[in-house]
Length: 266
Image (cartoon, rainbow, N blue to C red; front, side, top):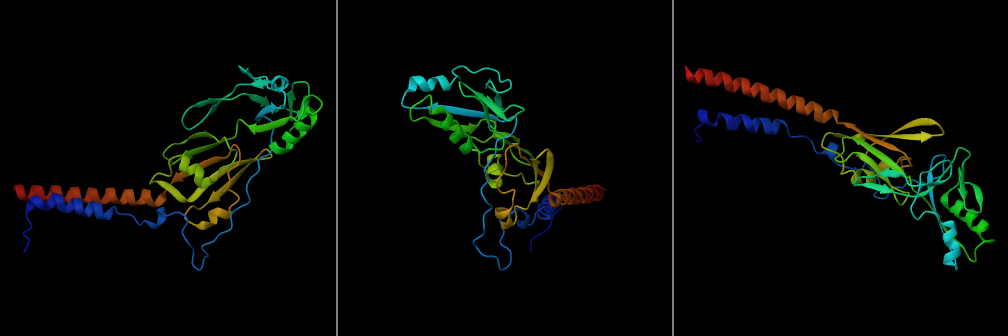
């Protein structure tokens, strides 16, 4: 028979504390399969961003004549952007500040290009703008090629994640799971059942909710994040409750231990 001695009481109470604080793993498991659900799920349609007022665009031109093409690429040093002129904004990222140069979309939805002048871009995709500029350049260049990209495509991730920050997305496409992975994943106190995405929609704020514990996230309209989306991970209520309960158990254990110390000392 194992003899229980007074010296073993602290170990006994520590064991009780750790067992009482153990949590169910289910709330932490992503993409759980529902009853009778297939192992193949439909993915939401890929998001194609459209240019809006205030966006900053990179426009790079090339042709059979590099010297002539250089006239349409006026950013060797960069300058401050003002109503469609050149820009060198400082954009936040997860690791450092990235300097970019490009054209600001003005209040009329235009950018100002050398020789071409005002080019309307608001509401268009980068491919549409690329084709439009390419057509206008044919009178100046032989076999022109145009590349148009966003320079300010970014999302914000805050709340219960390892690395909250504003992230610049160079490839102009990112999913919610990718974004959370980039932010170091959720902490143990993050609520995986209700990820909040705040999105701009024609001057209004739209609040969307995603449950990472289910596979329905893949066909959610918030699976693909949009430019300027804010992802907020709120604290997990279950973890908070269990933490409070664990401290209650610890408090009771310490009280009992103190009482026993008093009794045995007499």
